[in-house]
Length: 97
Image (cartoon, rainbow, N blue to C red; front, side, top):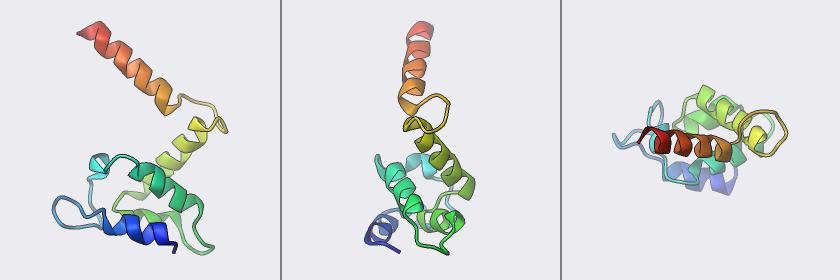
């Protein structure tokens, strides 16, 4: 377990004061998602994505989706990047409003 893992984990107490099993992934501070993805990618042998997810208080499937999205954002996998999705969202909002 790296230093970043310990530092970020200590900052992620849910608004209810609990870390494990919290469903507050959407409420994480900006940049934390990227930090959690980095920790998951750089994990030591024997450490599972599920363990990392639990430590950070996100559902394992959420972390798997974040890892997949990071690969899309880097161009390693096909799909809409987060930037492209944000542009589409803004265009829809502007058109609707």
